[in-house]
Length: 166
Image (cartoon, rainbow, N blue to C red):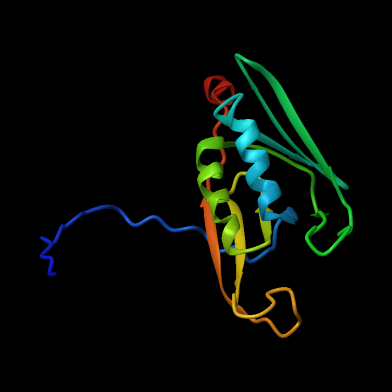
């Protein structure tokens, strides 16, 4: 069997993510399947997911024609081997909105890692990071090594009300 594909020349401006040298205003670590479940539930209500990160908790909220949905996660240690717990580290409280559609696509990577880390800075793209571990043997053992990491970036939604005031 053989295939022949024609080359495509796509001219597009390069898009770069500015390097984060100062660290994040907030960093949330939780189970990747838990994030996937949150995104799936919130997508039923609206195309916008509002993240509100305070000192010890993070709120995932959405509001649409069907109603309002909110899930609040607080710092908690893992309860068993299959639970990753929730870690919320905050330098500055932050509130931003993101497109649920894209977060839901990113969350489909939950099969690559048990844990996902969300890095947030005010008016900067959110970083959704999965550490990909070696699948051979026990991935939770201290001898398992990280093969690499998968990072997604998504710019926050711009509030139209703020734009009209300017």
